[in-house]
Amino acid sequence: MSRRPPSSPLLPALAAQVLGALPALAALVLVPGLAEIPLLPALAQGACAAIVSRLQRAPAWWIPIHLGFLPLAVLAARLPVPPAAWLGGFLVLLLVFWRTDRSRVPLYLSHRIVAECVAGLLPPGGGQVADLGCGEGGFLANLSRLRPDCSFLGVEHAPLPWLVARWRTRDLPNVVIRYGDFWNLDLGPFAAVYAFLSPVPMARLGEKAAREMGHGALLVSNSFPIPDLAAEDEIQLADPRRSRLYLYRPGA
Image (tube, rainbow, N blue to C red):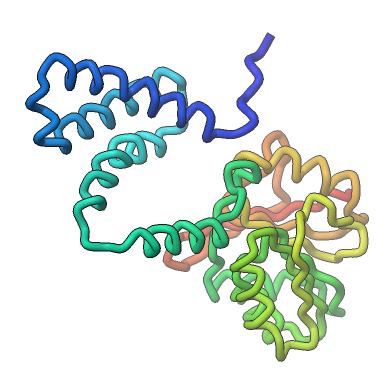
């Protein structure tokens, strides 16, 4: 039986931090003088947490987070910053990233070059186009100006990017920004769907697209292919991210 993945990656990360703290606490008990140099036990805790994270087979990008979390917190505590500023920073990050631990989709921004390429892929006669997780709306703003014959719907679940997207597209009559979960969006009416997500939800997206998208409708995935589904075409772009677009016709 395969091991069921945790419902949130924050749970194993929290476990790694707690387990990593145990050797550091033991060192403080055995060598009380370390308390006068708090950065040293913090570095030890970070190293132990990183080791636990690797033993958990967590993604490699968690290692620098574990290594730097507590040491950076110790250094930040020495800064002459009022507590309200830390709270404000936390609230801003929360409003930007919201529940990324559940969606497994961070905030990715699509370059103008990507919009220019996607504009050429849309049906010549226009149609409805959806952007799943539209972020701050920059991609849709560029795309709508390039293809005024199309109507665009962007769906975003993080409050602050959604508000920014609403503001950026307020004067674009062919763009609608909706707040909510794009998994609840019926993909049937759309001639094309654009997604810049992460590797984690791609299999689910492929199943949803195959179930809902019409015959001949285009699914464009930026950077992340759908597993076990051959792309109709792949396009390598010259944007700063060196993005690769994967093109699918799931309804076929």
